[in-house]
Amino acid sequence: KQEVTQIPAALSVPEGENLVLNCSFTDSAIYNLQWFRQDPGKGLTSLLLIQSSQREQTSGRLNASLDKSSGRSTLYIAASQPGDSATYLCAPRSNDYKLSFGAGTTVTVRA
Amino acid sequence: GAVVSQHPSWVICKSGTSVKIECRSLDFQATTMFWYRQFPKQSLMLMATSNEGSKATYEQGVEKDKFLINHASLTLSTLTVTSAHPEDSSFYICSASSGVGSNQPQHFGDGTRLSIL
Image 1 (spheres, chains in turn blue, orange):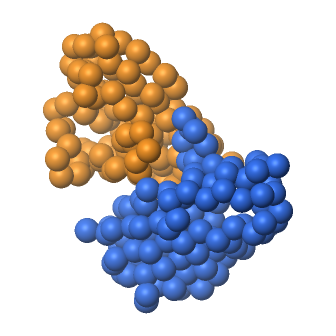
Image 2 (cartoon, each protein chain N blue to C red; image 1 turned 60 degrees about the vertical axis):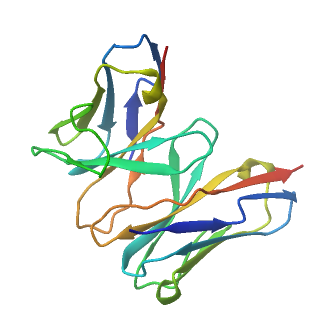
């Protein structure tokens, strides 16, 4: 069974700082990995998807890296803004096409 | 594009009632839909996977007679919580994908908060 760990559990930074969110997973036989954002009481918004053959994926201020062999992914958010405050979830997709979720990192960006 | 609509967003009902939650893909055909449950401050737990036109596959520990899933078309899946009790109170979220074996991402609905009195 895939186990996903996200560190830190919570993060509070002043506006403008860069954010580094870490994700580790136990089974490296993954199909791809998605990063999601969840606002309180809401569903999930997909931020980035990295295929197992890729090392990196970028979208605007977001950059995600994947080291499949060591079971790690990192989400970088540049020049954070108060609107970036949310919980960020990492979800590797196994070869049975199911997503496994970590507990998330709750980010607070202070104005 | 890739919008998933979930309805209702919030429901409160008495113990013993059955509640139906709908999940629709608005602008794509969803071959596969997933149903998740999320407790406060915890991550999402997969309950079942449904493929259009076939029976849902339930995860270990999920009662299929309690949580009835129907995926009758390529744009609609429903989850019915039968004879709901307070312990069924939770946040239920669906997601949809355009293909089981595709490299397409899963797209999520906004969730349904279910409160059983």
